[in-house]
Length: 212
Image (cartoon, rainbow, N blue to C red; front, side, top):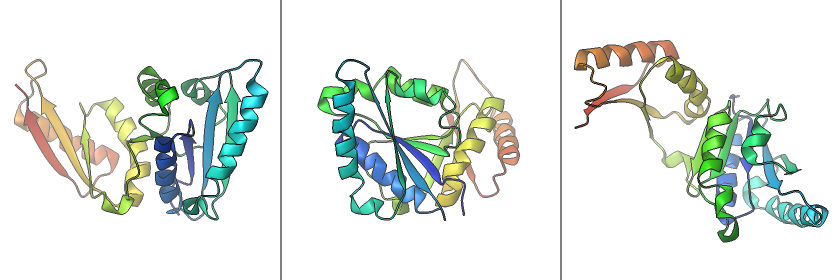
């Protein structure tokens, strides 16, 4: 069993969101008892009831896809809120990870792009995996984690391990040194080693890149 059994998938019912749903399903299948939570938000208004019915009909079609066969799918349709606003409530405290697409339907591109996606990442207390399309998890072999490797990064990486550990990925810690934030090679190596120790990494590699 792994700690990635409850995955939230924000969707605008576009093809990109559906491919993110496929990735989420692959992740859930790696747990003994897991489920998908589909989240769709819509604008409040006089037609909200009619639109909600249409959304439910489309969601039922989504649930018939073969990659969701036998998997519990919980549907959440919430009017009058943006995704990131919903995530700030206590409704999804038990979610282990969020998987979402990079863009929505042609009519609804802003649903994913720009500040909306940024705010999801900003306000989420759980790891957020943003995908451009479907990717076979078996084909992913390495994770490059670039950071300042401060205390905040330690907290962030511990959450990220929820996704990383079950996939058995090779970890590479990348420290980028800039002229405005210069650190010696030895100082960087010490920081990376200390970081790895604090987050419980045993097998990993480090890279230090000097940006001009």
